[in-house]
Amino acid sequence: MYDYDQATRSSGRHTQPSRPVYDYHRQEETRSRQEPSRPVYDYDRATGSAPSPSPSRPAYDYQSPASERPKAREPAPFVNEVDDAARRRTRTAQAASPPLPRNGRPAGGMSSSSNRGQQSPRGAVRQREWHAAPQQEVPLKPRAPLYDQQADQRAARQGTVPPRKKVAKRTARKKKRELTPGQARRRRRIRYLLAGIFVTAALAAGVVVSAAALFKIKTVSVQQPEGGTAYTDDQIVAAFGQPVGENMFGFSPDDSAASILQALPYLETVEIQRRLPDTVIIEVTPAVEYCAVSSDAGWVVCSSSLKVLRIDSAAPEGLIQVQGAVADAPSPGQPLVLTEPDKLGAMQQVLSKAQAQGLTPITEINVSDLYEISFLYDSRIRIVLGTVNDLDYKINWAWRLVTPGQTEDGLTEEDRGTLDVSSRNEDGRGQAIWRSGSL
Image (cartoon, rainbow, N blue to C red; front, side, top):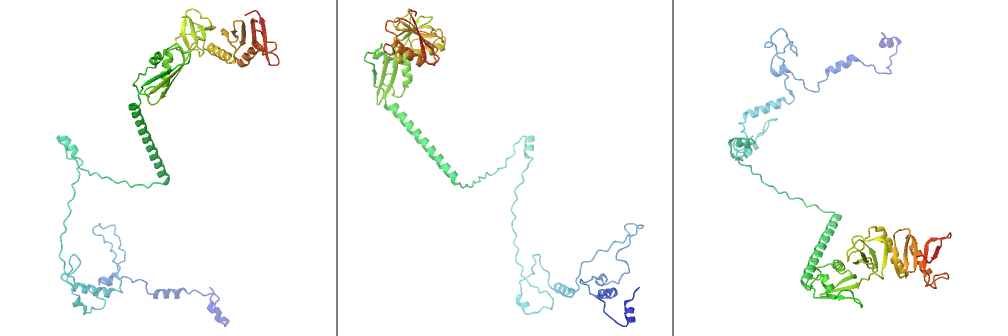
């Protein structure tokens, strides 16, 4: 082993090492001489007994019974030796003072004057004397009886009804919630709307009550054209059905007009007006016989609006006779109904457009074939239209041909035959074919 001190002495010089050398033995001696940071509890000194050579931990004997085995020593509480003298002086002073009552105060009044001049020994605790205050008994609140949950079952077995526990009803006030500006505006609109509805209902009720009480029919006036109609004023008023004294607003003008037209077929139109405060005006126009349609019951005479006027056994003269159509269950005052509804529409179109163009008089119309519709003009010229396509052009072309002076190659008033305007030439213009002599 290398000895640094011997090597230095032999070399004749002594130099300090560049790094300190740790002396283990010196450090151990210094550590053993240091005082402990916490006082060490001496059990033998505290109990006053001689030191025991027994180890701190008892040896456990497995052979001896449990009752004879030595019990482990319980650790003693920590004792600070620095304040041990002051604690002993405090215990001596407390032993000399009278015992304290339960409330923690000494019996008798506090004698602060007697103890004020006395000086307690150093480290002793000063004690104050207190007068015993009279103790007052506080009355205990009675406890509420416990609710018996099995009372109902016992009462059901015994046949009695137990008293019910009264439960107080608590009404909790709801906290009023603040409304946002949008909700407040919406509520105002709802209030205004409800107020408007109520006001309107009140006004309507007032109008109805006043109308029922004030406006009564006193006069019914009938207005007819100059030539008159097939009916008198009294017949029209009787068909009206609202006698004098009735409420002015107790009837519907449209319903009353329809009832008059059904009861009096030879009236084409009926219009009813109220003139306050007490007058009703009925304005009528007569219905004119226009055409006749065959049926199982006879010939049905209709007006220009195809309203059934009457039913006759023979074909009436001077009217347009409809060929190729049969009326279905005709009734005076009702609209005309055919067994084939398509023919009714085609017939009505041809007659209305020919009358509007001035292509009159027409004595006969044939709708047996909807692809070959024709009518007889002035009982001498049969005009063939074909279908209802381009009906306005065909009727206008036929009118110019049969009317003298409209075209250079038109027909005269003495010509008799068949005029076919149902076809067109290659340029798309109307082409008329005239066959003289044949109807």
